[in-house]
Amino acid sequence: MLTGCNNIIAWSLCVLTAVTVALLAWFELYIPAVGGAAVGAVVSLSPRMVKDWDRAVLLRLGKFKQVLKPGVSWVAPGIDSVAARVDMRIRSTSFSAEKTLTQDTVPVNVDAVLFWVVTDAERSILEVKDFEKTVSWAAQTTLRDVIGQTELVRMISDRQTLDDELQSIIDAKTTDWGVTVQSVEIRDVRIPQALEDAMSRKAQADREKEARVILAESELKVAEQMEQASLVYDRNHSAMQLRAMNMTYESIKERGALMVIPSGMADSVNTGVIGLGASAFRHKGDE
Image (cartoon, rainbow, N blue to C red; front, side, top):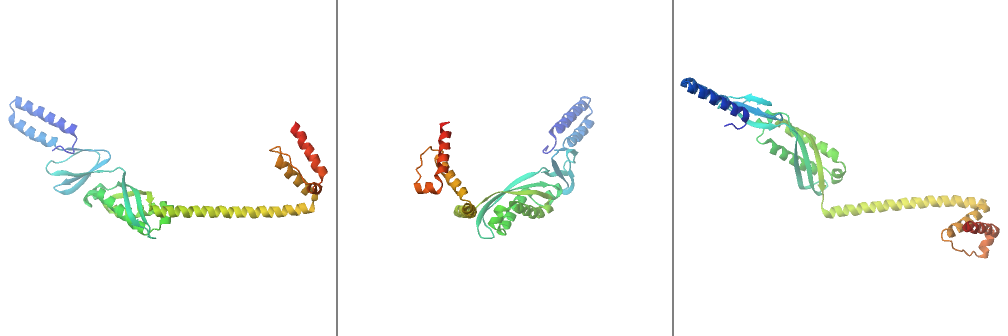
């Protein structure tokens, strides 16, 4: 009989009533003692305590009377009854859609989470039987409907827009139940393994294609630069000779190897210049 009330207050009132009745009986005041016992019993069953994050719906003779706010409230035993207590804190509900076809007929498994809060305790109790389960079912059916109207690429790449769309639709359904949807977040989108492998191969082929295009563009730029360099060498033979000497030097400087140059090549690049460069290279090596 004390379910839902503050046990400390109830037991305190019971003890106080018992002490009062005992004192009246001690002084042989039986009628006041009986009356005090009856009043004490009624008062002991009257208090109801509501926690700070709860709201309690009070019915009087089966009809809605009021919503009890946090604190201690007094009700009439036998006449008033607390129909339900509603938690007003933000809640999270996980829901999913399995093997649901997208707009482009791809079967997907989608997991999502719904963040919602009760804003009207009266409507959440009087308008729907089990609002928690109803909200969960509404979220699941809405997710299936949205998946059926969305292509796979958009579902994977534009989740934020999809989250906002789900929130708007679910909130429109739950507003009449005194429930407000704060946000919806899609956690995971799973596709068949064969399709995932095919998409992976396609992505790899696209990356390889892009790499080859970049390489071809680089070779084109190198060819253009080489063409410009050939024009410079054609106008200035000394530049060509210096380039040849530099290439010779670069080829042997790291390994310390000896390069034998045919006489025809030596004459074409001026042997005096190469001899001078080789002497400088040996001198540098001695140091």
